[in-house]
Structures are given as C-alpha cells and as structure tokens.
Image (cartoon, rainbow, N blue to C red; front, side, top):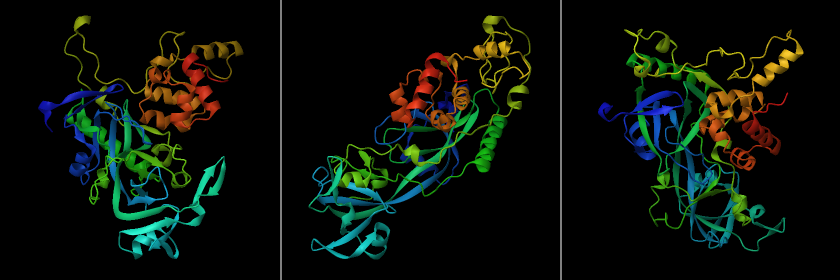
Length: 417
C-alpha cells in the first residue's frame, strides 16, 4: 500500500489516507478493473468542456464497476465542410438509419449501424437516410442538396468507471461515471481513515458495500449517447486501436451535425444517468463512541481535534442559535408567535453548510432532484454562493424558477413558507 508515501485528503470532515500513486484513469483501469470495488481519491482534478462533469482534487469516489459501450469510428469524407477529413465516433445503437454506398451511390435498404456491422466488414462507406439530410435555415429544415458521406473504419469499446461519491461519512446513491479516456485526471487508492483502526476502516468499507448492493444499480452498457468529434491533432491515420483512450474534442447530436448546427451542445453526461438524491451513512458509530478514553486531561493548547466529526450535529445548547437541519420546528400546538420566531431562528448561515447539510435544505426547497448532482460536484454553502442564476440553469439544468429559489436561499437563507 506504500504506507510510507501515504498522505491525507480531507473529504468534508472525514480524512482519508491514500497511497499517492497518482494514476491516470487508464492506468487505474488497467491495474484494477478486475479487482473492483476500490475506494479512490482524486489527486489531480479535471475541469473540461466536452459535456462532462468536473472532478475536484480531494473528491472521494467508491468505484464499484465499469461499463463498456460499443462505438464505431467514421471519417467524414464529404458533405460536412466544417468536419470534412476529421474523425467522429458514433454509438453502435444510435437511433439513426444509414444507406451503404457503392461507387458513391446508395445500395440496398437503410439499416442501423448495428445491422451494418453485423453484415459487413469494415471499412464501409455510408450516408445517413434522406430524412436526416437537412440543414436548418432561418429556423426551418431544408434539404442540403448534397449528402454526407461517412467512411466507417473501426469499432471499439468506450469504457467508464462507475461508482458513488463519498463525503462527510455519507455515500451518495447518485452514480458517478468517470471516462477512462480522461488524460489529466489522477487517482490514488484510499488506504484508510485517519484516526480509525484497520478494523474500523474495514467495517466502514463493508458498510459502503452493503449500502451499494442494497440500493444502487449500475448499467454496465452505459456510455455517452452522443457523437464524439475528434480534433485534427488527435487523429493518427490507420491507427485506430487507441480510441478507447482518445479524448474527444466535443460531443454533438448527429441531427445537429447534419443540420450544420454544431454550436448546439448536448446535455452533460450526468443527465443521461438515472438521478438519485439518496445518501447513506457508512461510518460505524462505534468507531467514534468506543475509542479509548484519554489517559489524562491536558492543557487546552495541547488538545488534539477529534479526527472524525459526528454524523449529525448535536442540538444547539443556546436557544437562539440557528439549527443546522430543517425540520426542527416546535410542536403544532405551540402558539403561532412561537412558530414564527422558530422559523426565523432556522434561517441558516449558508456559508457554514456542509455538502450533506445543503442537501437537506435543498429538499425543503423542493429541489431534491438536484441533491445528488450537487453532492457529486462537492458543492457546499461557500461554493453555492458563488453560483449565479445563469450558472444554475446552464450547469445543472434548473428552470428559471428553481434557479431563482436556490439563488435567493444562497444569498439570504430564504425558504418559502
């Protein structure tokens, strides 16, 4: 485990130690894909703009399994001046029909890519069916007057690591997909939890395993449903075996490509994964409650901080201190004035909210469908206040009303009543 190289990485209150391997995603996949699950720590983050989510340094993910999506590489021969000569890759199950070209002319009936690959050896020249040979002109679809010719040259598998984000002693049911081709991301194996014995750390991992097996389903055929476009620089003619590890420059919808609307980008990858706002505790309480008592009291300056924070903050001892979680109102029988005073006392200090605490408030705001997304991105109260309404709509797909509601909460702590 390279313990001599271990260093700590904070996961919102729970400190994970890792072996500092700093593997690329490809190296991690090659080394560990047959021995999953593995708990990993992101030691070099990724922030790109090709329809993927960002991965932040220090993010902890329990990688459970991997997926493989079959795709076919095509070289754009003609008909798309913007992409002519470049390579694209298309999912084999893409919902589009093609004609095979023989001598530049259509032959036979239209077929899906899956059917073409079953019956023909590559390379094969194809053109999309007539219904897709359109260009958008002033808001209307019109025939382009020339067809798009694609040369199908190679099929391969696009691979993803599938897992769940871990933060603050919680495991999030939302599935995280990490593309194997990401070049800059670096991962290290978590080897324990700071302040925990090996047995306690092992129990925590077993608890994660149990929660995942009981509550999470993984699609091992998962992949990006859009068309990948590769840059000129990444193209190596006649060498197609490395497309599994070649990062696309962009992703687009095929209809937009054929209509020359390549400024339209599809939704981020996360939107193609079933959403979940559930989260589960995995830290065994006895790891905290059964620690040996201190041998003797020490002066305040020598006291060490507890290595693990409690999963749920204790009730506030000062009556007018705001509660951390929603749902702490007085009983219904209390006078109306007391209920109003209590409501005011519940206005949170947004900047102090941890990731899972923010998730609880989002549920009260009726924004629970975004809790998993925010947890995966590591959004806490401090980061929430940096997000504008436009950011919330663009990056997380919120409606205008949802963005206004969350932005108002971030700035003022307002919760509609």
